[in-house]
Image (tube, rainbow, N blue to C red; front, side, top):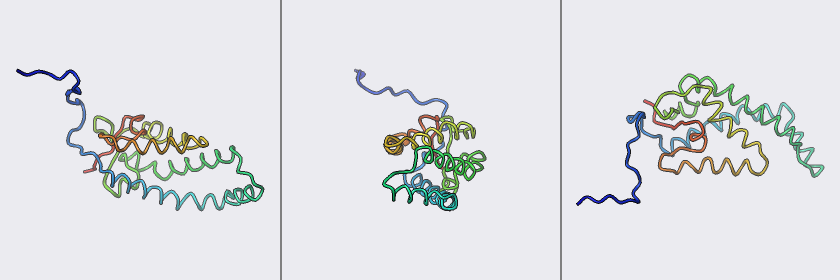
Length: 170
């Protein structure tokens, strides 16, 4: 007798995905993110230095204050623009940041295709970049976003928002 467990999870296969694409490993994703962060720091920090941001922070700290929210948002926008200038080409060409390209992983949609640059920029990256600008809460949102990688499908919050996943590139 073949009795079905009423509490068993559905066993329906996922249709419409590229089953040949193997999900990228946690190490590769972390490595790619670290490469991207170092690359951005090498570009953004000199811009902030020349633009006077560090002097502004030090002056505010000497007065026992912090930089105004408007200045923080301005520099957040500048950082976001620089991110798209640096990462825009590889994202639009292959669905990869420079770090992902080096470690041979890529972003695909749930059908295994390269997502449009508009989807990547507008849904995958921009919501998290905007959330990071929110005082206090932004850091918590960013933490929850990246910790979601430990799910079985290895999709972070930004992947869920954009309908993407990260796989090994061939």
